[in-house]
Image 1 (cartoon, rainbow, N blue to C red):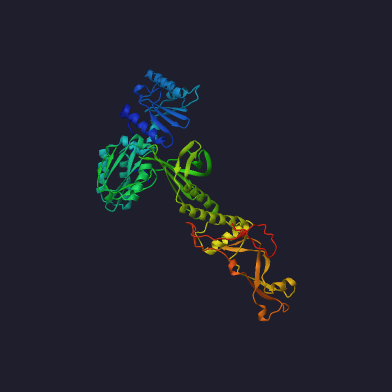
Image 2: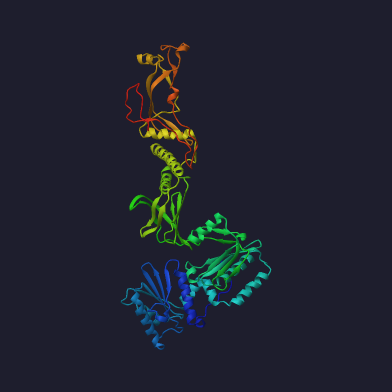
Length: 572
């Protein structure tokens, strides 16, 4: 929606020198505050050729303001050109990248040529902001123009009268008149404005800065007087947001606020009662550098290092805050300003939708934090923050270690089978046992499977001494192979490839009592392992929060070349 109401052009000849300076200063702040440092020089002690200085990295812009309403022709005001040249010469001592002359008049061709000729032999850009340029900039920043041009009483009365008129054009009239009120609010101040909304019988007003340095140029102080102790959770939220500048919304209900006192510009100052106070994070200013590392230390030695993204740097009444985003997690560091006071670290993470390798990285960070010790957040320019962490209870560390074992198992199996999927939110005890067995098999171990109490063989009718010995009823060793071994994890079928099965003491069920003999043709025979060899502990359902129990698997080395009838005796 475009700007409502008539545009009143600023009359530069009526502004006067102080008004001209103030308008230009406000324009420069508005244009450059978001990306550079703006300094307005008080010339009472000699401005050294600088009225306004804008620094952006290594580049410096210098603005020289001259309130010459009728220019600086050669036929009159001969001292003006000399003054401009002297200001330019003094400004060159600061080695600017650009020098800008600002005047409230329209320059002639000869006057403009004089200004641009100053750059001859100098490594500097020279520009002119004359009346046309200033009018264009004010048109782009209409609220600044309004604050200097409008007759406030007349406009306010005019808009107020409209609020009493019938809304003949329905919601379009509502939008137009709300917008008109908004423009009036924008014109109250160069640095601040108020957004407003009606919610039933309540008018909500939101103070908004017009540029990132509004709080420095025109400070606003808010004093809250509470009606009693805050609830612990609310008190902590206030401490985090106001005390350390964390970007979190905080809401104080009416019953918690006795009064709210605002000190600042006259139009904003006052004492308010029976109010709900809600403050929200300011718009994020782009950080100069976002790539950081979270480093864990043992003395001067780096024991672990994880990359992250710096998402927030804030400051409050108690100290400052740093937020680092990690894949699936976030680390918030609150650093008190008082020396000797330890910093506070808050690490939150979720394994949801992460593959095991990424989940393991987050869990490793958690384990480092739980173990305690020194850490730092580092950028290329240096250390941003850090501290010494206390160790966490052993129970929390054990839970993390069990969860890490599960993630390691899942990672090994996924890489072996080349089937990648996020960490399941829940596993059954059977899935968990299968996963541990699969990892051990992939890594070359032998495992005792609780899922193979019996093995079925088909007799081909061919006789042999080995077969007769097996059918004799005495325990014998047996070995067999299968080209595929499929396990099921979270509903997914994962093929481990070929495996071999072996047992040192196996007996055949009493099939012969049924009248079947070795020469009677093909027939299925079932063999069964002794129950005492099927060993496992109780396993509870595995959630992302950690394992309640875990399987105990017997293994023996991968080089399992012992003869038939020998026992495997390696137990990790």
